[in-house]
Image (cartoon, rainbow, N blue to C red; front, top):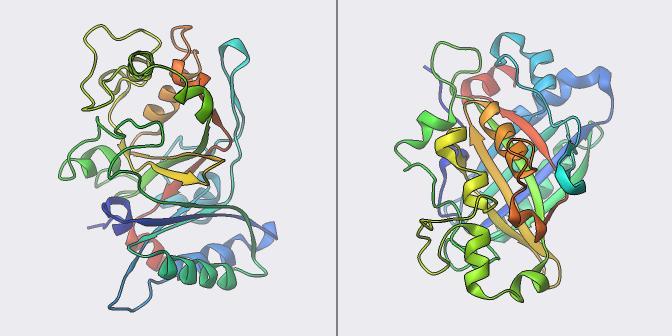
Length: 294
């Protein structure tokens, strides 16, 4: 029996930090993986911290080949879409995603993680995020309308029992910067056609355009994923952290190809108002797999 990392499904948290690391010495991968696998949450009664620890798929396969799902790979090259649109691949070696109820606890725990990995890895990407108007992203639309119910989410997100990597999941992490001024200058009905949903109550449009975001990321076509997106940034520079989990990496990669216009030749209209800045895939192993490496 294998157990997924609890932070994957820890909904309702108000403070988040995403820490991405690169190994300093390629000859010390085992030491690095052991150190990061030994990270534990603080013992506190005033506010806990949820962890999600993930590894570059090739790194995990190198260290634990018997627990690595076949065919899963890092975001090792950019996606070149239509009309010159590009999704960058900025793959790193490991991710520690912290979430909790208060940012001071997240801040202190993040500093502790960085200290623990000093001399083994460099912190190359750090992003903090927070919820906006309960369940909306910074476009003003409800995010995650097609998410499976929490009881069903493990079926879609986790590798099943009996296969390498059981109870693990493939995580796609991307940072998307919003072109806020251009987006907010649009009338609401045009925003809704771009999204493919109504803004107030997230009802899917009956005659949504083929280039709408809903049409280009249709989970009935590409397969279900479990999303934990969050807003990030400042008043002047902000956007969305895309956090998507799946038992099958193909679901995620096909959605990206579709958004870039590589499936039907039609590019996702939302990509004209958002810019992808980063892109990494991580394999998030089970709790038992992490324990074996401590």
